[in-house]
Length: 251
Image (cartoon, rainbow, N blue to C red; front, side):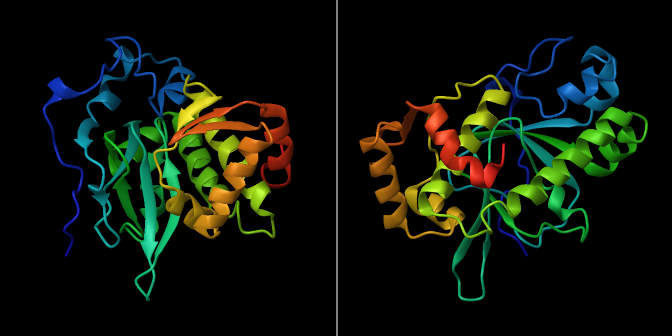
């Protein structure tokens, strides 16, 4: 049914460093939950056996497609993954952009099939987790179970983030501040980052016209909020940008 690349295997020699026998990869989506349970990586051999390193996927390659059978979730190790749907008229609807340390596939639990498409926007590497096995392990690790619930509730919250009646400036500010905060959580710079998604994809996600996105970014540059060079962004005035985003992000 699907022509997507469903978690393809790869040679481990081309993967990024995965920490050592005691420490987790710096972008591990589950390290905090496991360490708070008093377990380092060596004590989690049972979990680590479940982890399959995937990639690299090149831009345009699919992790999964809508309708594929569900059996695993994946944590992004490197790169950016876009999730999207195609409507009845053949138009794309962008659902989200997933960064290192974030998990994709949790929204497939209910129907046992992936309800959307997931595609690499640049060079992507993943960690694949068998969901039945990690769910079983979570029953023995309360912190891991709680972390899975948090990830699912975060997905629900993000999905409704731009549903309200917000201005174009507020939407763009919230998008940029959201990226900044998510990158900072994983040890990346909160002020300087690359937009791996196109202006058209950003516009689709924010439910705006592409020309609106371009116009707002130019205005933010003119007002001294940002410096932009092609896809490279530097936030120059973080407090002002956060103030603009407040009506959407609320904190």
